[in-house]
Amino acid sequence: MTRRMFVAAVPSVEWQEEWEEFWSVRRETAVAQGLRPVPDGSWHITLAFMEQVADPELIELTERLTEAAATSGPATIRVAGGGAFPNPAEGKLLHLRIAHGEEALQQWSRRCRNAANNAGIVVEGSRFVPHVSVARSNRRVEMTRWVQLLDAPLLPSFEVDRWDLIESDLKAPRGQAYSVVETFPLGA
Image (spheres, rainbow, N blue to C red):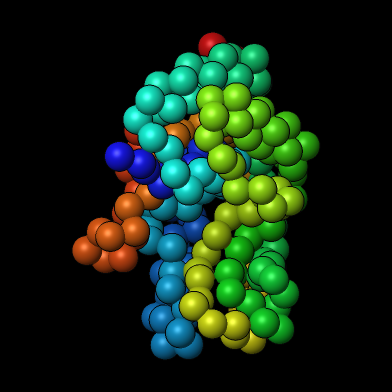
């Protein structure tokens, strides 16, 4: 059996509550415009994505992530402003940009990707651009106004003191469900 998994830095509960307060009044409009908002409480920064993780590889992956996390320190992260991939004029993913803490996120991503590679797992290999996903679209859509809107909220910084290994189930009743498989304290 294989699983679809990713390692993530998860914003604090306080940050998620503030973001939800800002986003909740805009969610319905986003849906009406063909966007699929990330479910409440599922916001995260993906450090490494693995399409297929077999059970034997999972054991080694958790061991290697434990080691990598133990030698990585916590960091303060701040998001500010919006963005869209591949670009705002033809967006498929609306996101929040990282304004502070990008260096730590880059380092963590390298360590998580190395842990997966050394466990024999293929890691999605595109260039790492740290961000918090907000909404997706199956087709390219004009997102310029959404990106500008996301420049408005003044969200608090948050401390990341752990990584979560998360399983992503695309066959869940609502289209996608996340479940935390393991947590790795930083600097433990």
